Length: 120
Image 1 (spheres, one colour):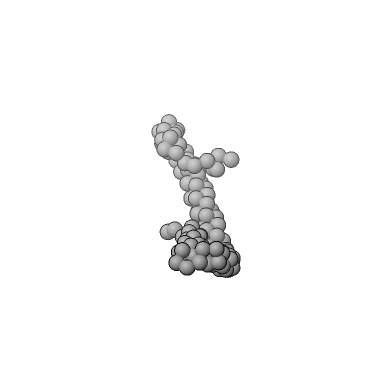
Image 2 (spheres, rainbow, N blue to C red; image 1 turned 90 degrees about the vertical axis):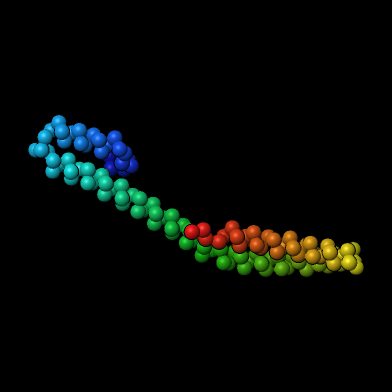
């Protein structure tokens, strides 16, 4: 359909050139046809904006439950990280290994939270 393509400068120039060639007898028809094209372009852009917002809203709505699940999983994963670090190494070295393991788990949660944060 001719109204589906985006408007270009050449189309505007073509309408103006057609008006010059045909004279003022076809002004109303040319203006109506061009107005229809502009209206179709505006409607298409509006629909695109609405669909982009809707997909962003869906992503933000699902981010909360995913973040909660990730927090629970990393919390549970922290138990063996702590046990292994303290049992195998022990002492200060084991404590340092435990801190590094927990820092990695926290980093995973922070990276996920930053990824799902809305960008405006």
